Amino acid sequence: MEFEFAERLKALPPYLFVMLDEMTAKKRAQGTNIIDFGIGDPDLPTPWPIIEALQREVAKPENHNYSSSAGERSLRVAVADWYKVRFGVDVDPDKEVCVTIGSKEGIFNIAQSFVNDRETIIAPSPGYPVYSAAATIFNNANCVKVPLRPEKNWLLDPADCPEGARMLYANYPNNPTGATCDEKYLKKLQDWCVENGTIFCYDNAYSEMCFDGYMAPSALQAGKDCIEFGSFSKTFNMTGYRLGYAVGHKDLIAGLKKCKGQIDSGAPKFIQKAGITALGLYNGSELPDEVKKNMDIYAERRKVLVDGLRSLGYKVNMPKATFYVWFDCGMPSMKFTEKMLDLGIVATPGVGFGQSAEGYVRMTVTQPKERIAEAIERMRKGSI
Ligand SMILES: Cc1ncc(COP(=O)(O)O)c(C=O)c1O
Image 1 (cartoon, rainbow, N blue to C red):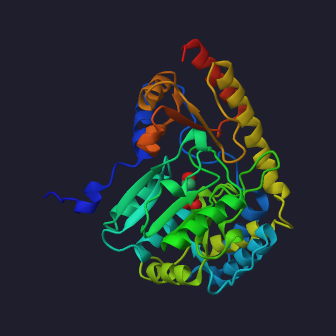
Image 2 (cartoon, helix red, strand yellow):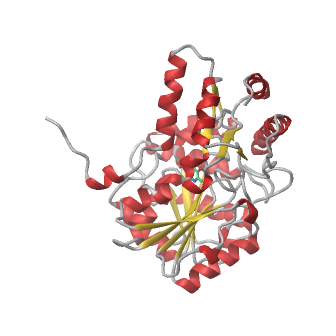
């Protein structure tokens, strides 16, 4: 017997990183020594106090049963406290916070909760693929991909966005471009959404991955007519733990909680408790030492990669945030990616994040400096 996918699943494009993994696995099987700058998955360990908390909490029987899809109240309180300390914003842990199973889950389920058939979702292009793929297709919505342009510092311009859309996703510090924004820009986006009756979904997964004194703002600093998604993944090297949070307007949080109530039973309690320890590392708006130490490592690697690429003749910006280096590769991005793979280097083609990013490539600094230097040498010898 054969089983056919549902139409909406058929309509879903293959997930970029699954394809990339398959290509890389083939090369590895041929014996190539791979230097992987592909997926945005930190190679550094979770800070030790968080691991200790996890060990402690997993041993407690009261943490072995179901949580709730809204998340443990103690973690919601910790998120609210953290918003106060980090962004100076007051939020109600009961009405304005929801724990998510990684921010990806929340980013998808907010569309399930608020978007009706044939309504429009605005997604930046290039952008995190979930906005235009799963969030759009599983809701029978219509996605308008609004191009981000280098001449506008990769900032989504509301003037390019269609009126009457139901939802708009924006993400700074940005994957894949590494672009950043300020609070004034977020106010402009939020005001535009309010004027147009559009739900503003702000993806702040990289809010803490900042360098050179830059600290990313929160959309909530510009007002609460929005929902913001945050993540433990990149801040604390906790991608595999699957823990995030949504904070914002009480109606949007209530809708998300109602939707999740039918779908999941929350992240494991012991992981949520470890999350409380993670947020508790902050004493003020500055990055705590445990996080800063890692960001300093990424910052150094970023410099080695950017300097190396510049020495090969590429025009590359030094990103102020994220662990992504994004540059014009001077040819179709898939062709460049294939050439790189022949040298045993994995990079991500810009076209995978949207047609308007054709010609660009993303490299993630999740390799030690020596491996980055080796990759640059391979590129030099391979005349790329
Ligand atoms: C822009 C952006 N948003 C959200 C996520 C999801 O992160 P997580 O589900 O691990 O919190 C990612 C992951 O790479 C991302 O790049």
